Image (cartoon, rainbow, N blue to C red):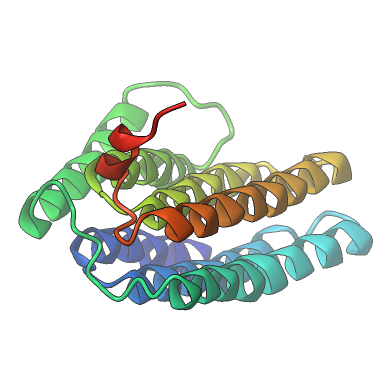
Length: 209
């Protein structure tokens, strides 16, 4: 069942490559949060209930609800109604993400990853690279923030692979990292919106001291 959820998560990576509305990106993050909640619930059976409860609450509340809804509020506040405007076509994005998934699988099959589940490793590595690709291939600043969230989800999946020994402090660090980063970047996007009507990274070229 865990592997099925990982496959579903991989499908969301493919879908994010062809998404052209910013609200769609936020909705995909919500779906990923639900999937990560299911993976955490099924995978982390051997840890104590306090850690499990914290991980499940973090995943369900922050990854599924708080952060995606916060991103939606930023989109509404700045009236960013246009498409994400990628530098490359959706077909190219889909092809690149597919190659990343295949490449991660081929790479994982040639190295010794010990007791780490190869499916977890492939999905985690693919997710990190897809997040990086989203950041470099999209124009909107808000999309860059979402790309960072995708990267963090990949790191979270890799943590779940060895989550039965994952200490509380590691999870707390992940949570604080997400929360602070999104608040700072959200404020940054809001302030940029006060100056520029179009929130493209190209507009940053016009900034001067």
